[in-house]
Length: 600
Picture 1 (cartoon, one colour):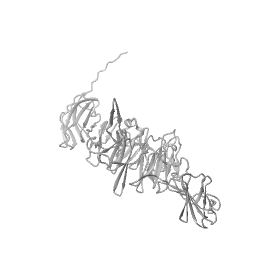
Picture 2: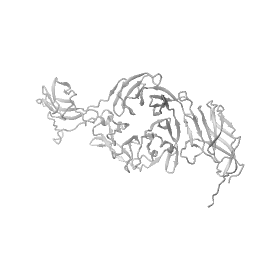
Picture 3: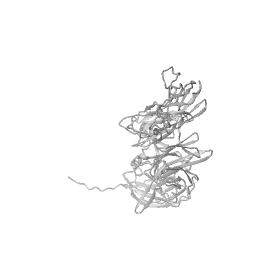
Picture 4: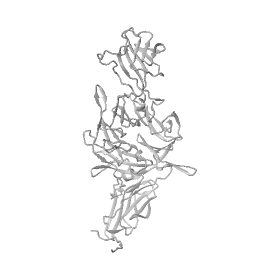
């Protein structure tokens, strides 16, 4: 039982993150904080986030920022509007660029590096860049038949098949090769295809001697017959190269918006025409995607939203449709000597609304309820979902563009960027709530570019985030690129604060009064003399006190009387760090409330 005039010492310490649940908040969390975080490479305190320094401006919305290191030289390419630039003096301003392409799609692009080559996909184009030249990816040419007679037959399968496939067609190209063995008399060679492409010049090699169309051979494209001027000798190795384009085949891959590397292959998905399709290339060759190298994942009414490598499997997460499975996994198996990747459904129906990622070996994705993870990623487990974002759901899932969240891993955090709002997931600090293993979170607000034209102001919030070798970059639709560094937002002060929980000193029926003495703030030395302490009494801000951090601590004198609950808001427009806060007070008396009774 509380006793009046009893001295109470309360310390707020061991800060872990925010709690936006609007419920009972622990003393080590904050129900209202902005632009604070814990830098694990620095002091063990919460402190103001780094600043945003403008390092580049381009003439269109930033859809991609690509980093490519070759021979100790870092190349930076920028997808801005419908153009692709090489940023020659990255990260210096003013920007010096080389225009590489001017037909880029106006949508978010993806990239990957394979065999020291940078590959870029934007949902329409598929480019490769070697550090000097940008070219459209030309598909690897398959040998689709082999050791055929000039009449287009083969003896190797004992007559069961007349056109045995050696390599399947490549989705990226209609060009292919047929291989024959000359008989010394035949001049007509029947190809595996009819209706050849008119704009491709057919040629042949006979025992490695090249023979061009119109100079040693002619072509009947309709019937698919090549006629040599002189019959190849008996036993000669004859290879004929031609092109037969199948409509829509190349677009299967080019129209994909999801690109992931797994098992030494590239997997492609997110094609609106194949909403549940996942395509994959040959081992070590992102230029060759067999026409039959794809898997249909579940129902096409639920499109694939995320493809996530992890735990020796490729996890495919789909949108929700009725109660059908939304999570599948793919692993490699062998069928008739060919690697295939069949899909297997998991025991999860809650779908993905935007994207997902492998966050330090935790497979997570965004559902309509928040960030979800698996209780286990064992391929043979029940794979029960666990909720990771309990502390910030009430704010995050109500963001206008929650379905367009952008992700980056940086400094041990998962940054979830929605417009200019950033939610930082801290996996190093976990907690158990019911059966969920949640993350701790911090919350930032980044600057919004505003452009005034006559009487209209247009806002351009941050729209994407990119990480490269421990450095973090942000972009917006105005064409600006920022780097996370410094102590200001491009010269503008950063407002940051931490608010303690509502504290009734464990005596909810009594009023309290703080002591003028006994208040101590433990601070990181950052030479800040503009740190403000605001008392919030029963929801109403009462007093503000300015303190300094030059000693690493300060004694503050705040007298607050007859409150039921108290909070403190510690903030500044200059960088500061907070280790803990101590306050002393005493129980004053019972809470008094007058009631007007209505007698009936």
